[in-house]
Image (cartoon, rainbow, N blue to C red; front, top):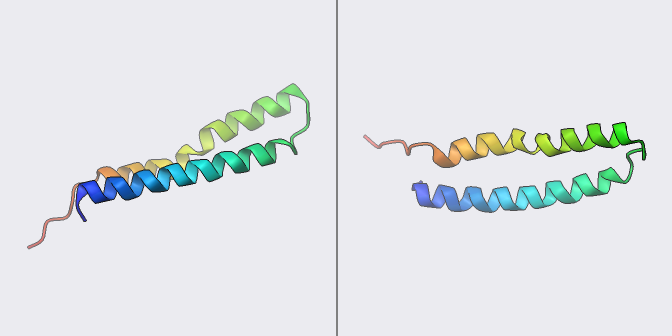
Length: 69
């Protein structure tokens, strides 16, 4: 697969995934108690957790294409 196609697919997946993640995080935030410490912990974790699936996707997008023999 060409690098341009991989980046196009990866960018679309990243945007769609982040959009869904943000909607889910916002919906789940309503269930968090109104205590400042609970909200701080939730938003700290939610703000970092999106990178777990994004890092492998970015690595895949930037990987060198396999050469055919």
